[in-house]
Image 1 (cartoon, rainbow over the protein chains, first blue to last red):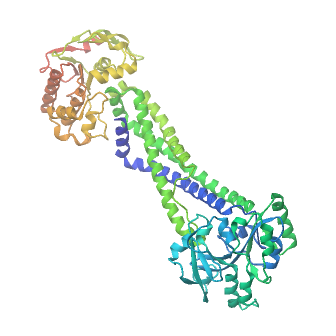
Image 2 (image 1 turned 120 degrees about the vertical axis):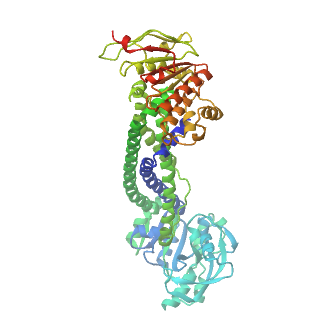
Image 3 (image 1 turned 60 degrees about the vertical axis):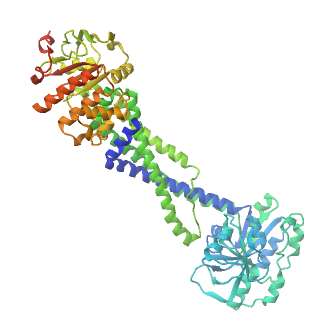
Length: 426
Length: 210
């Protein structure tokens, strides 16, 4: 019965309830949205970073290089000479070196020229077909396969650059030879091909003095080697790279070193002695999160302020209603409820208000993520899920605490009231 | 059944009110009359255990309720006493049916329905208190007071706000309910219309001045 009385009382004054709930809702909504985005961004950045120790690319903003080369969220800083990059890729302390060449895009997604090692790095597995083995063959990431509706054997044309309405390379159709399983990594949103494809398309378009395609085909960046053998005959692999197209350009190289010492020494050497820059991605991402964290903390403080006001509104509503309700509370005492019951009744009302606020706030954050997704999808190829993220249980606890604390004083007053005096008033 | 002994109550800063000893049995309702301010409501609250007497005792079935600790008193009142107030107090946000069932000792929905139809408010159970007329509200109050099948029914000015027709109806219902529940009935009032309905009565105003 207490629960029923509490609930009925809350819906009896819908405007009061709306006031409390709307403040709680916005506080919870903002915090929940921040938690959701922060958690998923961190998770995504962590997952896509894999064990890439170092990124090499053209000089420019280090963060931009990391965002473009690892996360494909930004434009590249420029191109680097393959010959120059090769010197570093073939150094003995390099455990793994994956070249990346960016050229076209398809439906706003990047067509990435690389080697099969790149796919292995993200544990990519084929759902259908095969990996690219010849120029102009592509393997599609899972999301793109769904979005484009392309299937094995279909051909499509790339668009120059990253924009969906860019110049179309209509002489160079790509052929789909494989589709990857979903990996929940950056792989899902890439069209993967070999580096020669990127060169082939652009050597013609740009009319540069590049080697003829036949030569390019002969380059064979050791693409077909078996990943299983990778570790033991590693140096051998690199020695096998018969890259003759040294005048060609690539965009970036992802490096993994054999020792951590090398990771610390290499960047300085590369930055000082070459036209390229080397960046420690983990460092840049930490810096990025630090900066995002400042913004998020500010927003959390604002949301915390709103929660505080919500707490006051719950307090004021319960407290001012107490005056209107003193007769019915006294009546409850006279039909057998003990003071503790009245105390619980008021706390229960605070809790119910908090609970409603939390539910609507949670829903608001999910609606928010839906709208953010529409923007993030087109701007960054980012998608956030609406799942429950760690930290939200603490938010629930916080909301209930706000409800209880705000109800404490009114509850205390209700418990302490002089029933006889109230019932004697006429 | 209900007995008072040397009962007195003193509000801070004023003279003590001394109440006469009386004994009320089921089937013999008692009217306690007096002008306003003479301590009628105080006496009723002492009998209901809502206040503790400064001196003396209230005995119900031979047990002194004045010695019960507060939480036991609340339970005892909930189980054995039904109170009809001068004003009809309800929980505004609850329907009449839920108001009848408010008490933890009030019994089932079926009991609420039979009680309500006996008091002629069976058709208003789904309405809210503010949708009822004064007479209907007072009948609902009586219904709520007897939901716990009390040993003692206390009524505080149950008719003073009602017109003659409703007054006669309410007092008759109170008397009937007391009989139906085998309960002792004590009515405090300054409403002279009730003197003709209840045989036993005592006056408070003469005794309270000491």
